[in-house]
Image 1: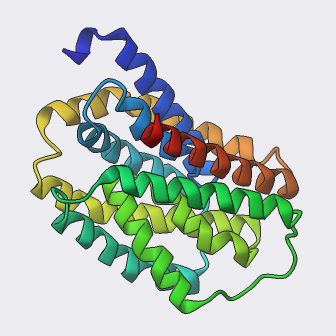
Image 2 (image 1 turned 120 degrees about the horizontal axis):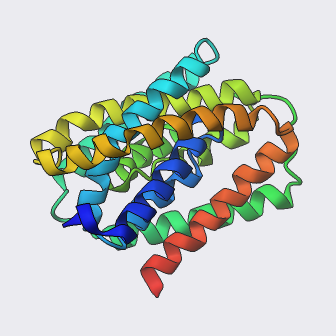
Length: 249
């Protein structure tokens, strides 16, 4: 049983802490490693089920910190496509090859990381963004988030080039992902993923999730805009390498 597996609990605490810090202050990019880390010991589907209630708690902490900063136009553009992506994930839950999804996300994350540094991370004026790109990235966000809580990379692929002010960017990512996670509770429950065993593990890890989210809010305030975006792009690159490594090795 997991109750006596020290290795699992060490990885679980690390995964939840990193996710909490990432989600609350750094737009959730690094948090994509949580399910792969837990999957070293348990089934990835169980890992995703354990993480979902924790993500909802982290979202609540983060939303409170960034209340009033949301870019409503971009949020509305992304929400309906993300809901569609969740629906696609639900209806194809037993059919899709998750390894292919990881590979695509890994390649896109690495390419975008390289693009970010090649462009010297120019913040510049805020852009409006393309509606169809928002729909595409929003749908992929919902789909990959449903599979493995990996909605960060496709969401950032759309939002980062818009060069939003940092608080606005963070709030838009956090509120979009938070809404996606709340919607996901319904299909996860319908699929039997939110069972007593998984919820008990989530409950034990909730203090770690809360502390991680609180620490992330404080940490991001100490970092300049330039270094903030360097960290985001670097995180995307590392995530891409990790996803490809999981698939190919």
